[in-house]
Image (cartoon, rainbow, N blue to C red):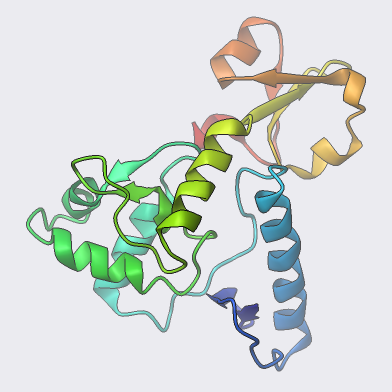
Length: 193
């Protein structure tokens, strides 16, 4: 279930949550549900729904903002996150902050592993974390349209209008540019790379 304020999504959990009070929050909840379903089906590589972390302590918010910028299909160590928030010895605190992530998947704490390569903990369990990482490894990140010559991140609104026979998968924006494609102005894959 998903919960939202008028600012953005503030909670993702497996148990039933109370319905949001405002129409704007209900729209954000519905957007988050659609994007989460697309992600879990391998049809989305990023989340466009806004997130509201205003109720999260400052240290945890900094940790979650760093985790949010880890690219789809990539992983980082807890120590890497600790260095990025300028607390290199706060590795355990980083793990605790990620373990209390109110919006897992949308803020991809599953992309953070132990320094020895071990999976580490996860709110929904290590088996789910392994499955999410496997899903990301097997999902293409970029797709281009042969007729428009535009390359998008998987999950972009433009991808819905691409015919299967016109869909081209790319590993990077540089690969797409090398054959004459330009980055989408909506999902901005060059900015995410």
